[in-house]
Image 1 (cartoon, rainbow, N blue to C red):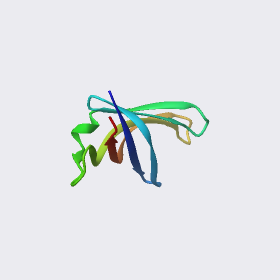
Image 2: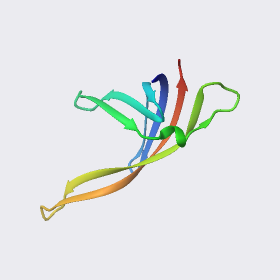
Image 3: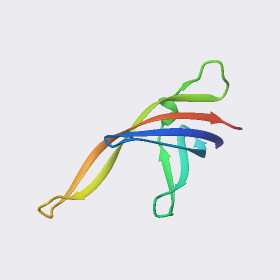
Image 4: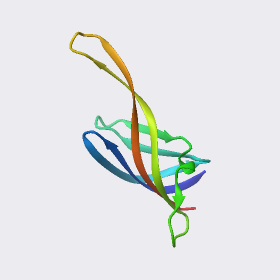
Length: 99
């Protein structure tokens, strides 16, 4: 496992959201930890992210690129029925390997 510094931009219909921090690179997976809006500690694993990234020119240990994953969401429609949808979430990820 390697420690990394990351910058991730998540794109959606409502706009974009950027967050940065320190995480762990476990093989090809990026593991990040952050606090959600309720203050709970959340761990997110971006699986096989290194296969989507490419090295940044004129740098060492820096990678960037586009990445997407599918996320299931649940909501209740106006008739009171529970609806499940699978949506695609797009990210732009930059990482620097620290050790």
